[in-house]
Image 1: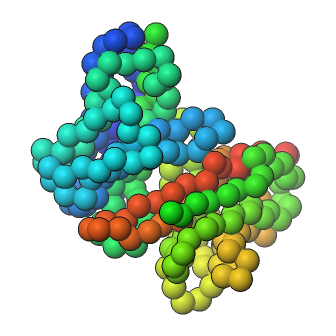
Image 2 (image 1 turned 180 degrees about the vertical axis):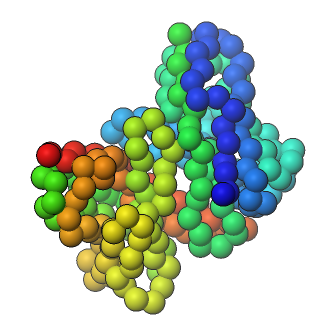
Length: 112
Length: 115
């Protein structure tokens, strides 16, 4: 069964900390994505990557960065965590072309 | 840029009743469309997708959706709802850009099933 694995289900961090959210897929997909999900706002795209070492900003990139050193791994970095980054973070991957995404189970991040 | 509207934030139906969740999209070209379901605390699971061809598509768990270009809609239906269908449902529209694909999601519809 194909999988997208997010390293943590729940995470609590302090304001100002640097936070790493890890995502690994085992499907050899080229495309990987990071979304955040907030009640009433749906899923909003933070960053995405179509290839190794390639990244593009999504709709809400401010306060975030990403890294894709290997095809299977896509990391989301909060440079200096703030309370307004408390959210559910979802990683997804897909093949090239008009295909749907496979999602991970999500990381619920709380910044205190 | 593409966009998706799910006009119903919450819907409550009785178990065994029929269900229709609404989705309207905006996209300049022929869209490809998806419905996802999310159970509490989980990621999103693909229910069904439309790329081209037959405008009525069948998905998992007994769901179907109909693409209506004239109405820019892709509504999700199920003839008889089960209590286990209680979840949040997201419609998404896709666009091919550069080397990949990018989905834009609606804000979701929370489905409650009364026993």
